[in-house]
Length: 243
Image (cartoon, rainbow, N blue to C red; front, side, top):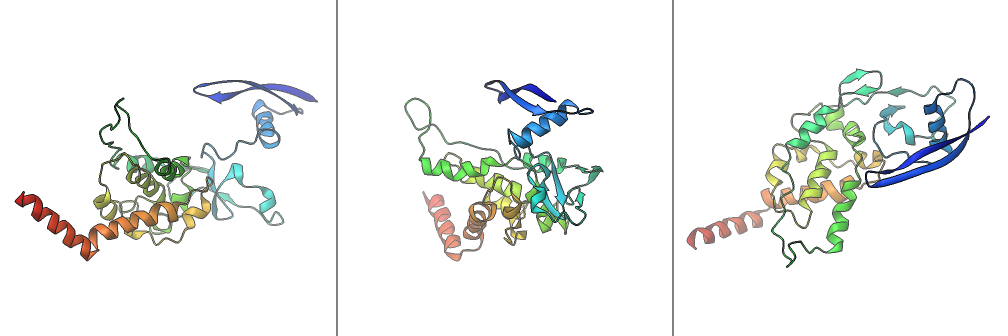
């Protein structure tokens, strides 16, 4: 038989009920019906990052992995992410990620430069960092990264998700903090060998490697390994001491 569901749709700023008619059968629960509505009428998958797992050995969001993409003539394996400790079944303990984020220097804006006490920025600068803010923290990029997945170097490497977080801060036109030293030392950016496996699994299609990690690596090289940069900084420090 058919049933009509009024499902609230919106966010913290407001919303409203929307009506959906769907087929129901004996034994179904409300969640079954909502899943059917989502599947057939209101596709909103890939927004919460809560169903991360490994499907046939590849980190994926289960809500976005279509059976039509898989060889259904063979058994389909579904297992928990391998980069993090298993709690139960498909649930893993990802709390390490939140501890990592707390250790990264936060956003530190420069003084307002407009008469009304706000800032002026170029749209191109905003567009550059906006991509990084699409992250839904599913941690698939962390799971696929061999430094964490295979070598278990969680103490030395923050992983692609947080390299992208650092990139969003470092490339923000208002930020004044310097995180390059931490990137090289405490955060282990040198361990990344830019295989782009993190970019391939990102459900938001963030260009993690090309737009985030490589530019950060270039900044580290400029600061620590470029002889002209060394000379320029030495000369500047000398001039500062003499002034």
